[in-house]
Image 1 (spheres, rainbow, N blue to C red):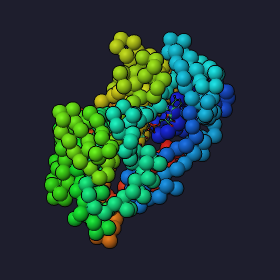
Image 2: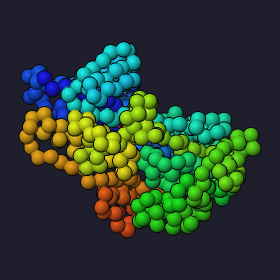
Image 3: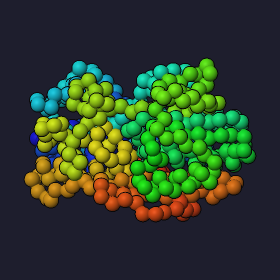
Image 4: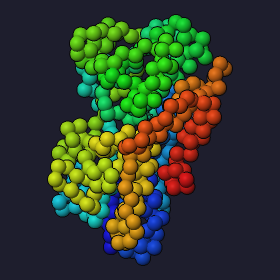
Length: 393
Ligand SMILES: Cc1cc2nc3c(=O)[nH]c(=O)nc-3n(C[C@H](O)[C@H](O)[C@H](O)COP(=O)(O)OP(=O)(O)OC[C@H]3O[C@@H](n4cnc5c(N)ncnc54)[C@H](O)[C@@H]3O)c2cc1C
């Protein structure tokens, strides 16, 4: 029997698992294969919706699902301590879990995503507000509904982050939201970036700069934060520059799962290296052909986005089927990447505008503008994301 282990059951892991369950249905029915999915919890959260939850364009219920209800019933799902990976031995193909159990696999897919490390910024925890978690988005929704005067600083601490278009997108939607509340004239918006562009895609960067300038949104590049002084309400850079705020919204540093930071299998931040086309784990000369990496957990030169995980899931599922059955062509991942750009909310004043920039390892997005159709398309797309994971689309 072929034993397939998938660790992580969010976008990346669940999509691979569901695709495999259908493609290997006869092998599963005969007992020639088994698919085990492990996760430390059973909450499936649609993170892409968080900015829209902050601005009352979607509600919490849209974003909250259960992993167990999105996984194909042919999959064996372990969550909680029996699903939390705490040790890994690639040479002996052995996984160890928080409840003390072990599992030996023939094939492994690592989809453990990214964690946040706001505590690494000195002083930040005394004034930490973020829309990168659901609880944080709900808290910010409350805070912003009462905010009508002063300076809002959005602090983007460092790369890599999930959905790198989101600091820009959030700034533009914040402008739209404050205009709708008739308080924009009393509020300054400042975006602090650690890099010297708003987005690595040239056309997103170009349009982003134009829109920020038209809307009086200030952006400051190469701002490497060294400290937050919550008493004085200032953010201080490593060159001593001080930026005052009334409300600080932070995009925290991201790290790979603890088990990979501890095991040395990841890079210094805990993200997993590998082949950018085959998606197999490889560190230096050590290549493990039976181990695939996917989604936010990787150190590959692609965006950390659900869209990326979606394209990668297709490649991994197809290639695993070929590995197991010894048939079929092998697929390669070409860096397909989509990061939605939303620029205007649907409000009394505007009708919502968005676009889905698309690119890959060799092709950049073309010049574009955001459109009203894009807004409706994107909302519909967000609502169908759980169906995409289930495999309906
Ligand atoms: C504010 C925001 C906006 C975004 N907007 C978009 C967007 O518009 N479009 C888009 O495509 N993407 C967007 N993203 C990014 C998208 O949500 C992520 O890229 C996507 O969730 C990645 O999926 P993943 O499965 O790789 O990782 P994750 O969703 O991080 O899931 C990792 C899973 O692994 C599990 N896990 C972790 N460690 C362990 C362990 N030791 N043992 C067992 N299980 C473990 C976790 O419990 C979790 O279920 C956004 C993200 C944020 C935060």
